[in-house]
Length: 121
Image (tube, rainbow, N blue to C red):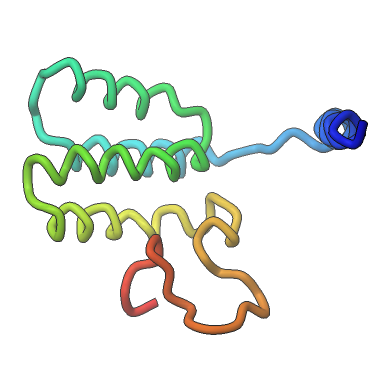
């Protein structure tokens, strides 16, 4: 029974919340930077990833697609170079997604570094 109240609460919150507006220019900048990282291969996997990047509707979707971009880059340039390339995208997301996704949580104890946060931050 508890699951139904949780589902109803979630639906009610979604219906009553304001629609989220995203800056189209920021979305375009992030998308272009991610597409520019990909090699020029025309295999079906690369085309599928390009398509997913092109149809992402918000910066949060692109944030989660970083994992797939990293996996693809690992095959062509090696793990460390791929990681450096993907982490270079981090500043583009700073004003576009929730700070909690970036690893910036107020009052958080311990190290401020996380796996998705570039070194030196």
